[in-house]
Image 1 (cartoon, one colour):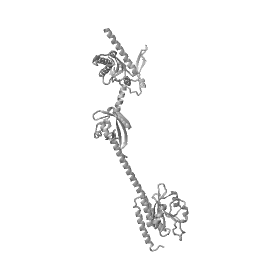
Image 2 (cartoon, helix red, strand yellow):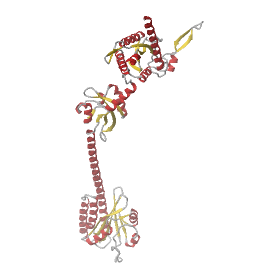
Image 3 (tube, rainbow, N blue to C red):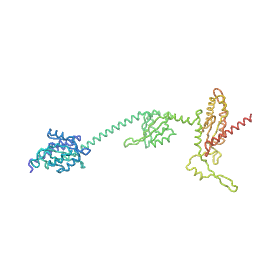
Image 4 (tube, one colour):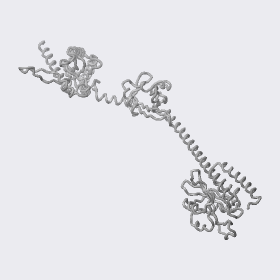
Amino acid sequence: METETEPYVRLASLRELHQVVAQLNTARSMADTLQTIADGTVTALGFELASVNVVRPDGNLLVAAVAGSDRVETDKAEAAIAGRTGSRESWDRRLNMGERWGELRFIPYTEGWVLDHDDVPQWHTTGPAPRYPDEWHPMDRLFAPMYASDGELLAVLEVDKPRNGRRPGPWGCEALQLYASQAAIAISNARLRGNMQRALVRLEREQQALRASEESFRQAFEYAPSGMAIAEVGGDSDGRLLRVNDALCRLLGRTAAALRRYSFHDLVHPEDRAVLLATTNDGGRAELRLARNDGSYVWVSLRNSVVADSAAGPQVQLTHVEDIEDRKRHELALAHRASHDSLTGLPNSAELRARLSSRICTSPPHLHVPMPTGPGAVTATFFDESAYARTHAFDHHEHVCQPDAPGSDGKGLAVLFCDLDGFKSINDQFGHVCGDAVLVEVARRLEQGVRDNDTVARLGGDEFVVLAEGLRPSDAADLAMRLRGSIMPPIRVEGRGVRVGASFGIGWAACGMTTEEVLESADQRMYVEKRARAQGRRRAS
């Protein structure tokens, strides 16, 4: 029967239990929380020893906290079990074999021998048999499992040595069970706080790393020895420069504020805009010319990459601009030397053939088929449109034909073959230095006598060729006469005046001919003219 004082004892116990529960959530760390749980068990629940076995990430349980009312006994217990680990398998066997006191698990000393060979840390000692049925034996074990709201095992509270020397009754078991449930909430909260603190630490580290990365990028961008630029991608201001470094400003001779008013499309040479567009779209690399502030152009190599400005921010284009003016000048000089005559600077034989070949194709501009016109088998020709369409499917080449060809507008691509008269005697009389000077002057006079889009080339020796497009036969004859007249005046070399003449042969290029056929035709006409003029001079003498 309940005594008159028992309600007051229970009320006092409830107050103590309330106080220790209130202290559970004041701990700042998981270690503090687990120690507070162990201390509260000894303070408010009437046990002289308690330990908290917390579940580690690998599933095993670690003795994380030990508390006791007697310092000596506590030190012994800590020395025996604190920091030691028991396997999850052994713990599951204990919790499953114990007597179920509600949520608690009790293993009496009579079953303790079963646990002597598992790896769960323990401090229990032997003792005499109980003198009465509910007397606590040193080998008795009482566990209070602590679960999360989802049923996950968080820890196990183990208690020993009740102060009254008896196994806890219904009131004691209820109080221990209630305390264990509140302790589980405190452990969950401590875990949550720990996760949040780790997340905050990780976030701060990431932010520090990001700030360091941004600073590294800023310094690498600002102090890079070659030009760097960041441009907007998309929108109404697509391509506009947002940020440039000092190296790009120096390269283009413009201030950063001035460059931010432009895009690379505004600065690129008109002939290189298609190259820039392909590079921007493909995100690749290109070599092109950019305008300086003084109106000149500099050759650069552009490398583009599109990156996100931030995790969810807009995309921008990062462009690396490398000055390749010296290399490009050297390459162009090499290409010029490969395609131009070293003495006169005119296009050489290979370049002449390349330019001529680029204008004519191997197919004739018109296909003709014979058609009988009646008795007598008189032959006529007509334009076979179907055959032409089959032969020239998808052919967008503008065909070249001779001025007298059917369907021509009377104009064509004239090929003027020029051979100097009397040049050998100059070499023989005055030497090759004088002869070279004559060739240089003849080249200059020929270039001055043609249009900007015409080509004057040196085949070799004293032979020159002029390509002039869009001429009628009379125009070509007039051009040959003017050029011959420009060559005839004396040429001053080393204080003396020397004269050379020139013979011109006019040929016409047409699709269906080879470059050699075109040049051979003009060459033959030149020799015809040279012989005719020589015969004329002999008759005159």
